[in-house]
Image 1 (cartoon, rainbow, N blue to C red):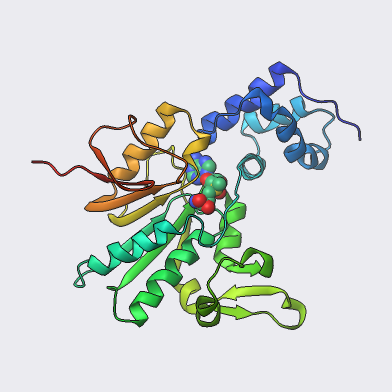
Image 2 (image 1 turned 30 degrees about the horizontal axis):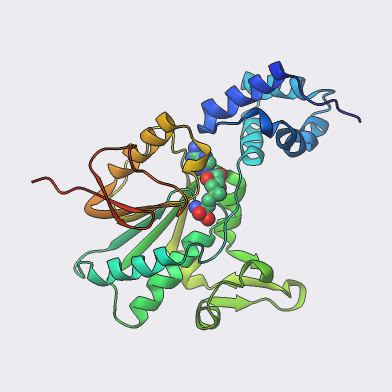
Length: 273
Ligand SMILES: C[S@@+](CC[C@H](N)C(=O)[O-])C[C@H]1O[C@@H](n2cnc3c(N)ncnc32)[C@H](O)[C@@H]1O
């Protein structure tokens, strides 16, 4: 079926939908992207226009279709050891952490799990060498599609080239037969990593404070008020000495008072005098 593009009015419907549901700001330059990502869903629902599809998801009659649209409209690019300086900093923080309690890390927009397993490999290796306390790692995202992939922890080789050789040997299983060309994260890490759907623009569930929160490469999709709301909520879930990482190209300067920079894309709450 041929589908025409979308009018400004139709675009406004989908723009308002994704803003309300996920806090994501879509500029008109994203019209073509929206069309290409949702094309198959318009067809699957046997609709003859994008406008009709937008009305369908807006109506909320089909929550599963709404979630599918959110899955398709989020951008999930990620890779192992992305912005590696943050994992050097994580090592330093974990090394100094109190050995008497569990060191807790949260990847708050974890996409398909590469960030979570990078954290897990880093901390597991420190534990092996007696350099870190007991630890836990959690991952969350708004997209159910990426969370399913993250829980599997199964990646094609071409996605794993940034994993150092010794970590590949220690923490990854090489696929054979029908799994040739793929890699499975070791069960010791898959069992330890916990994943849950959390929408960062909604009130957060009750959480035990984290020593480190990764909030990397997601704030770029939000406007300043949404950014402020999201960061404020996460800061409330950090331990007093906790560190928040954002993407290296992102900044929290001028957004929230009382934050101090502790490294590139790394922040901590100022200590009260
Ligand atoms: C570009 S990925 C970043 C992945 C990883 N943190 C990294 O830096 O490689 C951004 C992720 O943010 C998620 N996201 C977008 N809006 C969200 C929201 N409101 N709540 C939770 N996650 C959201 C997307 O689904 C996507 O997986």
